[in-house]
Image 1 (cartoon, rainbow, N blue to C red):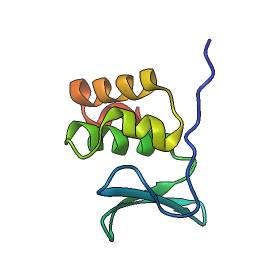
Image 2 (cartoon, one colour):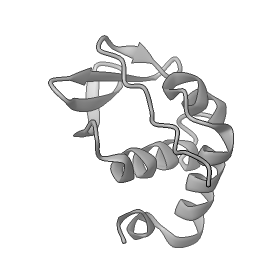
Image 3 (cartoon, rainbow, N blue to C red):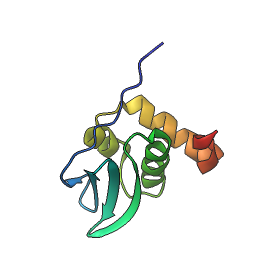
Image 4 (tube, helix red, strand yellow):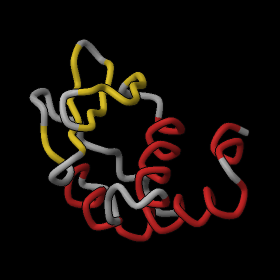
Length: 95
């Protein structure tokens, strides 16, 4: 069975693209649209990470490759998360 590739969360704000940034502070990961925080989750909460990054892709805020590059996760994983979100919605990440 393949091993899960965990996301890398930067300490300083790192831009995912021109509009969306991410920062880890005190074990909490914060996402920003410009200067405004739009979402947060504990660093070890992979379900919330997968949900929110999928929402960013589906809503057109980022491309899948942006998530792959920013967090060091595999392309196929991002594709699976996006498909799961499109087909089953947010609740699919929490059961």
